[in-house]
Amino acid sequence: MRRTLLIPLLLLTAWASLAGALPSAPPTFVLDQTGLIPDAQEKVIAQNLALFEERTGIQMLVAVLADLESDAQDDATRIYEAWGIGKKGQDRGVLFCIWPTARQTRIEVGYGLEGELTDLESGRLLRRMLELPRDDPAGRVAFVLTGIAQEIAPDDPLARGEWQGLQTRRAKRDDDGFDLGDLIWLIIVFAMIGGGGAGRNRWLGPLIIASNLSGGGSRRGGGGFGGGGGGGFGGFSGGGGLSGGGGASGGW
Image (cartoon, rainbow, N blue to C red; front, side):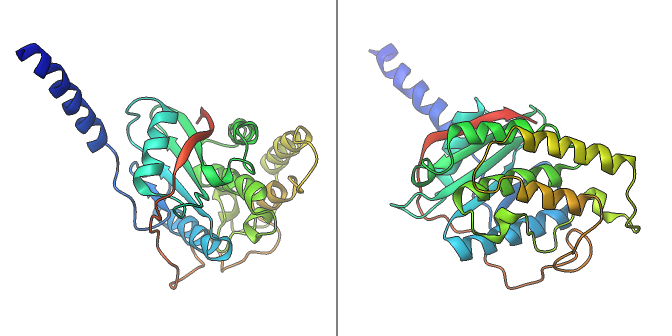
C-alpha cells in the first residue's frame, strides 16, 4: 500500500519540479537569460516585434535560455503554452528558442500558423542561419525572424527586412567601404538564396539584411543598432495560444 502511494507522489513531485523550471513570461517580446544579445540590440528587436504584433496581430517571441531541461521540442512547446503566445482560439504565434550552451535552436509554431509556416521551411531557415557568423547573434536572430515573417506575413515591412533602428555588428563601422569580408558574406547570402526556391520573394529580406551588414543603404530609425526606436512600444501579454508541436529544431 505504501509503495502504491509512493509512485504517484514521486511522479507528481517530478512533474512539479519540471514545471517550475519554466521561465516566467517576459514583459517584452525577447527573453535573454544568458546575455547572448547585447541590451541595446535586444531592445530594438523587442520593439520591432511589438510593432509587428500591432500590424499583423501575430505574436512572435525570442527566448534565449540558459538550460535545456529535456529536448528542444518539448521545452519549446511547454514554454509556448505556459506563456500563452497567440490569442486564444486563433493560436497565431511563433516562438524562436535558442540554447547557446547546448548549441540548439527551435522554431515553435502555433496551431493557427502551421499551414503558413511549415516544418520544412522552419528547418530550412535554421540550417541557413548556421551559415551566418556566430559572433553576431543579433544578425542570426534577425535573419530567422525575417524569414518567418516572409511566410506568415509576406506584406509586412519585417518580411522585407525593414527593421527600425536595427543594424548588426558589421554595420557599426564608421566607414561605408566594401572589403573582402563583405564580399565573402554576400557570397554566403547568395549561396543560401540559390537553394531557396521560388515564391514570396524570399531573396528580398536576406538581401536587405546583407546590405545593412555591409554598411551601405538607408538606415532607418537612426544610426546604430539600438540607436533608433524610442518609447511608445507595447509589451508582451500572453493570450492563451496553443502549439501542437509544429516547427523544427536545429543547431546554433
